[in-house]
Every structure is written in structure tokens, then in C-alpha cells.
Image 1 (cartoon, rainbow, N blue to C red):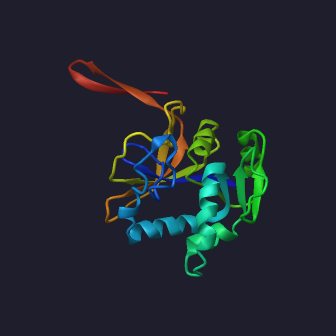
Image 2: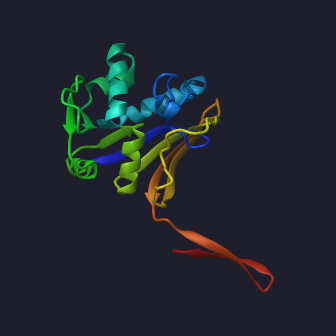
Image 3: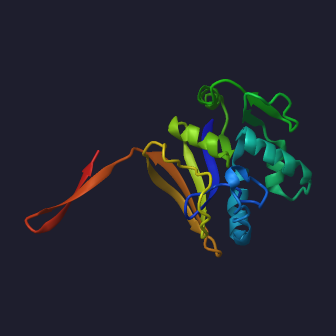
Amino acid sequence: MRLTVHTFLTLDGVMQGPGGPEEDTSGGFTAGGWVVPYGDEAFGEIVTGWFARTDALLFGRTTFDLMKAFWPQVTDPDDAVAAKLNAAPKYVVSSTLTEPGWEPTTILTGDPVDAVARLKEQPGGELQVHGCAQLAATLHAAGLVDEYRLIVFPVTVGAGKRLFTPEAPPSGFRLLETRVTPSGAVYSALEPAPFVRGDVTVEEGAEVTTIVE
């Protein structure tokens, strides 16, 4: 399966608590709900399009518990996101969860990198991660992510959980798709690529750019 990571980000790179004030207050986070004012029709189209490609879902324990508490309550047959979340095969990385309570769910125990690497070897289309800051950072560091789908919103919140942490390895990215919503959110689909850098020097009075592999 192909592993894709989907998340909402602030301009200062925070992904924590986008959906509500009480969604994730860990670490003393008090700015939750920052996505809601920007949820226009175009935003909805983008997110619905993500879930239309879902074959299976992968969660960390915290996000799984948050999703499980909310989405089974949404029974509207016209809600494509809820329908996919409730019906699609789900995998949760956890060493403590024993009874998922949101079927169909499989618990992945042991080393999460090994478990996800084995899962990716199975036949199928897209294995999607939504949110899951710690899990996404681990998968990024392990080089297991095939594509990132990110929406950056025109808001800053300061400290909070980030997709790309200070410990994350350097990486380049190729832009596959982009869109700007009327509310000012910027959607980008990105494929990891080798990290390259460059240098700018002056030779005979002219700037010279050199790419360093």
C-alpha cells in the first residue's frame, strides 16, 4: 500500500488541536479550534477528495481515541468523510489498547516502524494517516511516507505539536498539486525527494549559484 500523510498546519507549523478548544490540550495548549473559521466549501472539497482515495486508515493511539469519540456519532449517509472513517479498515499503533471499540480495527503492536513497513507491503491502494503528530514524525524519520497532503491556514498559534520537529531529518519535496481556498488556506500535495542545498558566490563580479548534492 502507498502511505500518505494528511494534516492541517498553522503558518508557524503547528498541527495540534485544529478542530476544537478541547480536542488536544496536552502540553497546556489553549489555541484549539483554529481551523474552524476557515472551513469554506473549497476546504470541504479538498478533504472529501482525500477520503475518496482511502483504502485503509492508520492512527496513533491519541488520534484514534479522538476520532472514535466523534465520528461514529455521525450517521448522515451524505457525509462521505464519516462514511469512510466508520467503514474503512483501520489500524492503530498502540502497546496498551486491547479493545478498539470502533470496527473494523486492527491493533499494531511492537516497533511501529516495522509494523507499518510490513503493512505497506500488503496489497491495496492508499493507507492514510490523518493528524497523529508523533506517528507522522516517526514515519517521516523512517522514510516511509510516500506523499504529504497539507493545508496551511493563515493563522499562528505559537507553541504546539508540529509535523516536522527539530529532530526531523532534512528532506526535499516535489510539488504534485496545489490549491488556494477563498479563506486563504493553501493546499499542497508533496512527494518526498532527496535533500539538496546550494551556495552563492561571486566570480568576476557576478553571482554564481552552485547546487551541492
